[in-house]
Length: 449
Image (tube, rainbow, N blue to C red; front, side, top):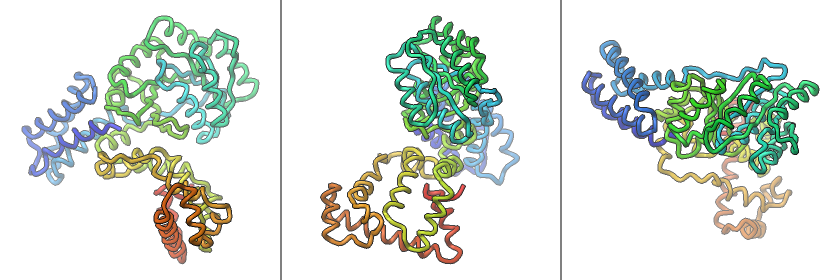
């Protein structure tokens, strides 16, 4: 995410290395490179110019005050502060005060509205403990209702749909009546999109909004479309005056223009960012954290939050007992792998760790990195998974055949597993257990909320 922009900004800061202090000349040179990087990331030139003018003024103002700070570090701090302000300054959550709260979803076709509806329903159900009803109001796109039905079943929420009704305003109003009767906390209304902004589309979304008077109207935009996304966001806001923006597909080849420009252009906050197709891959938008990630500083807070979302206190306590008794087995190991996978794609996770982004930018990190280990464990019998010590040579040969691996790989994996198991058992003695569990928590293993 934003790899190209991050690299160019890093290059701009490198020009200040070796300089004794910030001067008008080296500030001007650095600011020029920053502006060029922003324009290359599809940020509107006017916004890039205004942004870098602020950076320049702030740098000149601090150059003679903070003499003990290295020029490069000072410039990074100034850019981070200004970038945070450009993207909104602080996180803005949803207004959930309605009874029920009504959330209207709008956007172009292909922007990811329906997938976001599923993700948001999961987020509200699991993190906010709300009873959620999703509503299918896309009556045009083939299989749109079926898609939302599948997603609702996947995340465990109810869906309101009228397959034969082609009036989206009426469907939305009927859903709201149903939600009141059944005492739902939140109603999310998924609407139709078009391939481009047109009067028919705007008239319809305006009519739906007027008909249900939502607490929140969210505009979903494909971040990969860059400045076009910002222009579309403005066109929608001029007609329906929405409350916030959702940026989707941030795991793609995103240049950064939409994230950096939309708040400035539209005046509405980015509320959520979405990566990937998994229902877990939705995060609230924190401007400061995003600025840190763009500047290659990682986002360790979001990393830990993602890890904590996968933890179960009861399961963690059970696992702690098993480790102390040296009973950690392949079933436990498989559960830990599953928890890590639920946190998101591996490269995205590594980019959240300070310093790792630069180390991994040229690496092709396979999201199926655990596939080999999983195939070996899944080739075991239930008895073998629960009792690793029974794996003799004949059993290992069967595992090699069943998993499509050679015997050397089987031996290597079992050896590594044994070493890890011994280390965990040894650390569980005395006061080391609490530290070990905390470390595993940060790594995506078991821990406590």
